Length: 198
Image (cartoon, rainbow, N blue to C red; front, side):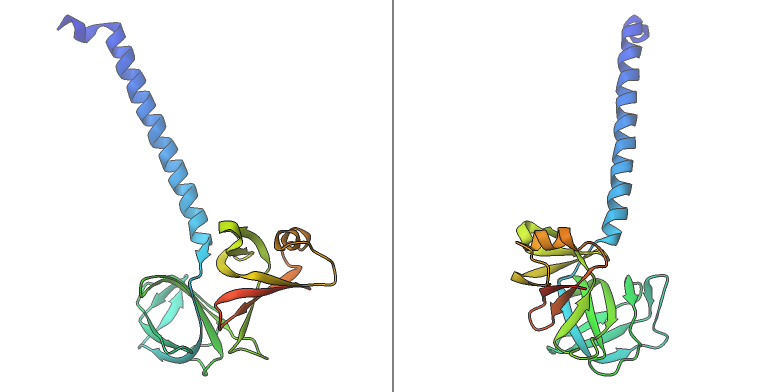
């Protein structure tokens, strides 16, 4: 019993409690910082022009989440069912005229984790989607990060269309920062095939 009251024991228990508290605080900070970053970055693994939209009763997007259900039939025949509460960005008019909107989505199997409906390009909406500036590359150049946080597949090679010479796609990204270039996503290939300086 006398060992229980020694100063060394209490110092050791205090040090252990302090280290545990510090570890807990660090884990909370890292997890909160990671979730904020993940909420901005969206890995796009599904792209398609919307042929048919079957809108459920009361469907809408409020505060970045869907209310109600919607089924979108894409140009390749796939039907994506989006359930109530799915995170979304919708800048295209719903219900849609065939091929007036393009769906980009982050999926897990057949489930949609997040999606965006954006207006199709006016001139070639079934083939090309114009996206923001490419700001970085991941996975040895297989994926590109856009200025809006979307992560999309890159073609090999990705064409660089500009009067200014660039030696590589990385050089293009460095020379044409946010707002000075656009990225062209080929809807048949589901990847960025060209970047163009503006």
